[in-house]
Image (cartoon, rainbow, N blue to C red):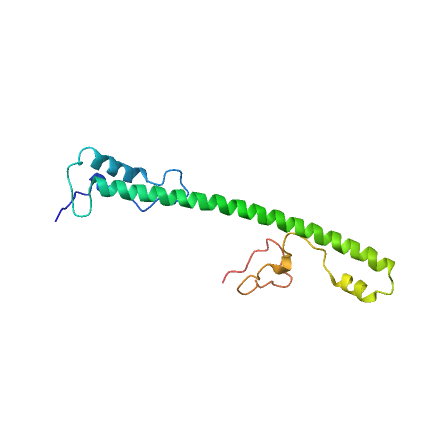
Length: 154
């Protein structure tokens, strides 16, 4: 069994770098790759040699490239979704305005006026009522308490 000293370059191997970094192979791992490419090129250990390390680094680079492409596609899709949502909200606002004019010109269409009165103005952003409620108990508010009033010792 091969034992390595604690100060060897292999002990520099850290946890994987987040995929968002520009270089997916961490510098400490690249140092190990360089060591096995130069000084230990002819040495092999069980499941570890220069070729396997190089292959795994290439796999990581390919995966990081795939993630970057997927993120770019997601960003484009989100931008398009926001633009289409804004366009829909604008069209809905125009539709309500036209419907109000139509309903005003046709007083015999009371159900239209009633329905329009119940409508909230359309917007592209969700209303504050749509936000999830905070969990937990609400804070106790002492009656007559003033701002910066010292609290009694417990």
